[in-house]
Length: 77
Image (cartoon, rainbow, N blue to C red; front, side):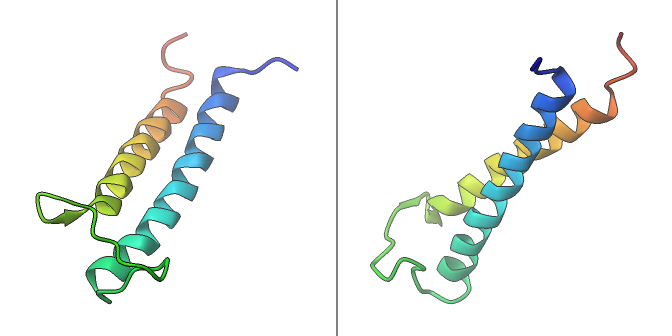
């Protein structure tokens, strides 16, 4: 099976969506509910922002870049 550029971008998009869902749920509980979804104390913060928010932003950027790559697939051949 040959892995094409389009298939790789779709896989990256799928992983980024899963990452956004996971880190989004963690961010929601940490910011709005003041509760750690894992039951313990989630005290990992960078510049007073929970680290899961940074994870959400990174997965969002990866997802946007993969969508741009999928949209421009036929333009640069």
